[in-house]
Length: 422
Image 1 (cartoon, helix red, strand yellow):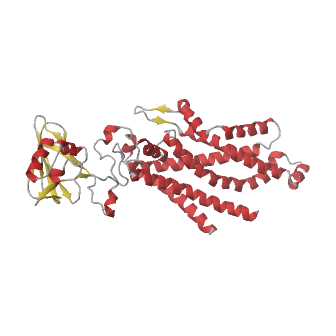
Image 2 (tube, rainbow, N blue to C red; image 1 turned 90 degrees about the vertical axis):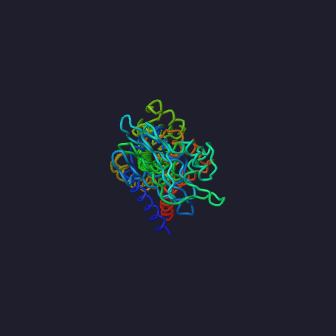
């Protein structure tokens, strides 16, 4: 049982470490750079689940970019295979047009009916907002339509549904979108699902944030935990030194235990942080990690100091001192060997605490870079719980819990070994 817990904990940490450093390579960095730029995400569906929900009985159109089946200057054709229970939220057509020449956008249904949605000189058109055309299509196909249907993501229902014997049903098949008069064009289907983890209320890619934030989160946890334990171990050893140096270190470690963590880290923002053009607060890692480690090392230092004082009262220390050994030599050659395993134990104990603190600080945008704490802040600020946006809550919550659980498993194993030796 012991070995299985230790192996499982180590395996989880190894998987997280590898995944954290590989995951960002699967993300378009441009998405993260424009995370707070609302215009960048305006064409995405808002607050929709991931595309894989269709594997569990759903029949929702995914968001996708269509590739042209015919492309030449002045004429492009795109095919969309519609086989879902709901229509796409929108179809956005963008084009580069020839100066002075109008562009025409036509959609042909599987039954062969053609509808001209647009003719004009703008650079893009949103089919779900062509209300006059949609009303004519609705009348022609016997489908009820109101302009406010667009706000409820059903604006294209007249195009993709038809009245058959009094029953309105989806018309499945291949729809052809033809763009005439443009040098080149693109067509985006704004569906009811998106990517691997859906979108938030601004249409931002939650999956991209999850993958990109993994690296920063793992680095922050490892660095902060290691620095805090190293400081605590060294401070616990140094506090046993005679004279002013030992007294000063002991006083600093006591101070560390009484400073409130969250208010102190928030107060760090005006001292080391900066605000970008999009009102994003940025804090350098070189300031965040030492500051958080300083606030956490005090308890470790106190515990290590207690172990050191106990060892210094033993006979082998007195024998070494009688032979001329000084306190520093004894600490380095004898006491450190005893304190070392305890420090590793403390590392496994502190890592879950660091994970929790980084998550909490993320609510206040205090953590540096782009991490899972940032995503937890999204969950709170966008009321994801009340919106039933489980794809914003479950993956990040589960990822943090499993990461913390790995260290808990290792900690329990080390604790059992220490007790069995005692």
